[in-house]
Length: 85
Image (cartoon, rainbow, N blue to C red; front, side):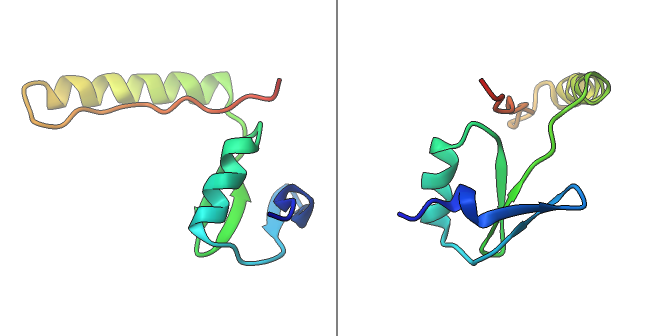
């Protein structure tokens, strides 16, 4: 598989993919990447890093969801972002 990391450029703080990929290629790429990306319409886009303010907001929102869904058949979860090592 070609090195997708080299095919993503940064312009105005937004990552712009240079070619369309398959979902299988995205999964392979994401497994090897140290940063988090999203797959949207055949494009791999880098996701921005979180801030402490965003983390507090997400935690508070998750807590409210947990309380609101208590006793229901579904549960909220929070995915942990990748971090550069």
